[in-house]
Length: 330
Image 1 (tube, one colour):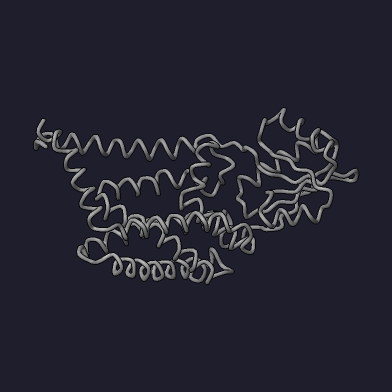
Image 2 (tube, helix red, strand yellow):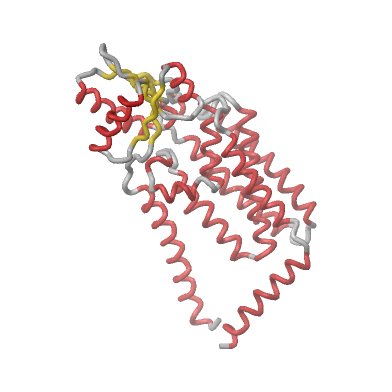
């Protein structure tokens, strides 16, 4: 590229990166409204259908109501992460059971919606929080910041190892990535669970989750860099941070961002790790299988990329060079 064209190229690249960051974050988080928030209603099916019709008139599709015949079963479903709240209507007054650990915005939306139901039906609604946020995480933001501050150093780990040991073999690189994952996951877990107390209650489990997250991200980043070079690493970082963070819903939750964006987020490490941390710290490890599967898939993909044979990497490099040659000559 001609020297005079380099500044223009830099400005274009930076502008595109800014476009991705701004479009992703503001696109997801500028207009928050609930959609399909799962709620158990302890009432007959017909009564629940009528209630759903009434609520849809005020906010269509905001809540997904499911009839339960027994309050205890509904409460169990709440703690097992099958629903986000339980509504128990009654002649002497109604009751809304929720988990504050799901976040203050969801708690406020549920409370406002079912207080509205109480006013419309002449019932006073009392609110019971069965999983309140602790004093050291009173806004429910610690899980997302724990994940973000783990993902970014994980990418840096992959880059630093590649720079420090450019000729390291695949097995040696995997061993160093694993060791770095355990170290970084342990330090972050110590800060979150011990030093600050923000995510207290399950320090060893948090260490394991942090280490798995680091390895999933660092191995994939290292593999992408090894197979396709810096452009692939840059693309990986863009997918993980400016797309992955807002697609997770952050402290707000995926039920309040565009559904298509939340569906993408489900398959990215940030959203999976946030859900795994919340479910571990606040819900006794319930419903942790799906997020662990996502992290395991990313880790497996990273392993595969790091272990790609040298011949395949050389072929990819030759193909890349062949593609760029006409552009250079023109």
